Image (cartoon, rainbow, N blue to C red; front, side):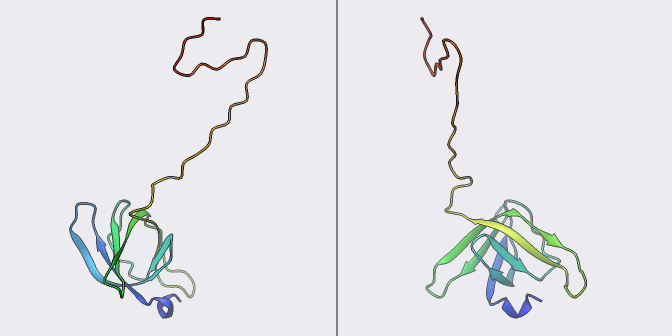
Length: 114
């Protein structure tokens, strides 16, 4: 089903730096890479490299391999969740504390002498 849309070629590099497989047909999207080779040894932390026409290389880190078995009308494939290697692993978060009651206080790196 996805085969007609797979216009990219990627290389699978294992976490230890060894090249597991080259010339893998893929559909590359910002956070998802689809590949129709069910024999790929993909694991979290591996890298997928895509050569760009400009000579630069896009490097993606595998977060979830996302293997899908053969289903009606669809061959076995990977829908791999990825993030760019130059992107932060997690977005910064905001913590909001609501404190109430008599003599309510918050001490951060300080001593309460009240």
